[in-house]
Amino acid sequence: MARDSRRQSGRHGDREDSDFVEKLVAINRVAKVVKGGRRFGFSAIVVVGDGKGRVGAGLGKAREVPEAIRKGTEQAKRLMVRIPLREGRTLHHDTIGRFGAGHVVLRSAPAGTGIIAGGPMRAIFECLGVHDVVAKSIGTANPHNMIKATFEALKSVSSPRQVAARRGRKVGEILGRSEDELVAEAVE
Image (cartoon, rainbow, N blue to C red; front, side, top):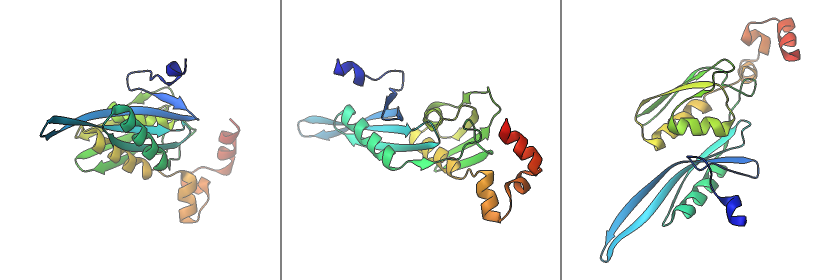
């Protein structure tokens, strides 16, 4: 019975425990040639998020797959970052991220668009709690570089409140709206 509760479901092995959504992005097997033959090791990339604006990614390496996944999950939980979301469903503005040969373009989208992203980026957005986004990976398809480039792009996202505080202005001045429009929008 306990074994069924730990069983992974879905294509990428998503698990949910203690309010965190875990997504297994990639598993890589490496071989070391020794005198008696080959020794195999595994590395696993795991993305963890709370679905409310916090997300992290980790890499775990071990001789066995479950141990590599566990190590990756622990590292992802330690490296979580908070990303501001507009209306809790999309990004505040378009952004670009680069890491190595990985280039990603992230664009906010209207309600109902869904997550239009591939591979590792989709896992990040699902764990982050983003419901509407359009993302494109330009360059490498290496999941390590795609994840790091996506995090670089997400770290550069700032909310109007953060921009207003940085500039010493009011949120309405940043958005170019009157206070009446902002109050009406907040009521809806």
